[in-house]
Amino acid sequence: MKQIMKHQSLLSGIKSLGIMLSLGLALASCTKDDVVQNPAKPNEEENKNLTTFVAGGENKTRTSMNYNSGDFYWEAGDYIYVKDDNGDLKKSTNAPTSKVASFNYKVPGKFTDHSSYEVYYLGKNSSGNSVTISTAQSQTAPDNTAHFGTAGDYGTATATKVTDKNQFEFVLEHHPAYLVFQPYTSNTILQSCKLTKVEVSSDNDIAETYTVNPTTGALDASAVSNGKQIVLTTKDATSGSSYNDGFPLTNNGANVSTNGAYMVIKPGTHTLKVRYWVKDVARNVEGAITKTYPSTAYASNTYYDMTASLDVKNYDGDHYYMWDAQEQYWKGHEWWSANKDQPVLNGNSNGNYAQSNADPRYYHEGGGSGRFDATQSCATIPNANELSWYCKYGDPRWDENEVWTTMGHLYKGGMWFKKKSVLQAEGHYDTEKSADGSTDLRTTDENYGSHIYTSGLPSAADAGNYFYLPALGYYNSGRLHGVGTYGYYWSSSASPSVSFRAYYLTFSSDYVLLYSYLHRNNGFMVGGFK
Image (cartoon, rainbow, N blue to C red; front, side):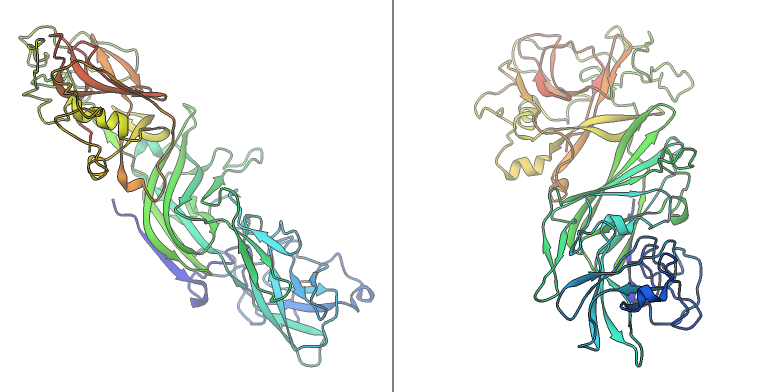
């Protein structure tokens, strides 16, 4: 599926982002002086020693804010800072009390020595001389950027003297980059779910703190803790809100008004990994769908459309086999067939599975006194030696959050492994020898085990080096077990010492094991390794 990323410059006037809802500079079709004043400062006597800085020096038709128009507003609580003749940063004494197109800021201090001054917008959580692009951002409604001021949006401007007035005008230029997430899905299971958050991980910092340099006036950058990841929560905690559980996923095409979610990030060249968190509210199941984006230069004062199809990976349920059987475990009795005998939920069972070698779904018999290789359904999958390398050197990572579907239901849970090509490049792969460098497991019965010390996704930079195996459970005597909890995957190698056993790789949240302990009549997965 193609993931579309497009960007447009704020300076172009076409959907100019930056100021997206939060600090836009759409101006009224009126004079420069005809702007909203702060009702908290109505007394002219109080203002006579203050200098006016007019936010917005152009005439522009005032329109309601929307994604397509590019018209943006100042929000309540948006203060500015101006460096005065003494080199001190002075905070405006007033701020808008509601969303406005333009505003007359009143600033204390001396502004007589120069015809222009530097203006700083440092967001709503500024300490007075710095601003931080937050690693925890929150949006309460789709297609709304009122949160930019608290998320770390910032900007600068040069305010120019208005002739014969104690007044300066400026147009703010914003410096972050902006991501506009627009997920969609045609999956009917997901369409009943809610988007609860968007998690973005980068190969480098996308969050940052910027401090006004007292000498140069420049905004100096410094790293923040956990700056490589930003989480945008997409919920509204207000009682009775339509978005208490998250944004809707009812759209089968990108639609910013349905679930458009905006994130402020540090500009720069980033390789991004995006996890869309979705929740089945009725079943109280929440998990993530992962998308990756190649290294891209994200420019300041620019927004980027991040459209993504959330049509999650579906596993068909047709790849469970007894070891090296000719046919899959439920052949002729599939859950989707006319018979519908195949159990699809953990704990359910059915008796229409193979129970003798007269059935082509029965396991491959033989061996038990030396090497015995698969020749049928398991012939082309990794042998025991090869699986031992995945086990020991594959950097297995349990991921409890990646969602997927199987047999008509939503699940999560699985393991990430390094790809075969990566293991080979590292010198950690051999068909003829196991991971100890000497033992051939096809002739010597031996087990391998590995505890899981790392969980979650690989880093954004390494994501392409791994593949994912879902925890699809297994069938035993016609009963389904462990979907979402355990993975069981056959090898092409039978046990060299016990005629009714074969090697398999199994995993859960805290271990990966290569065993030859269980009976060949179990219905384990065949395939999936890369």
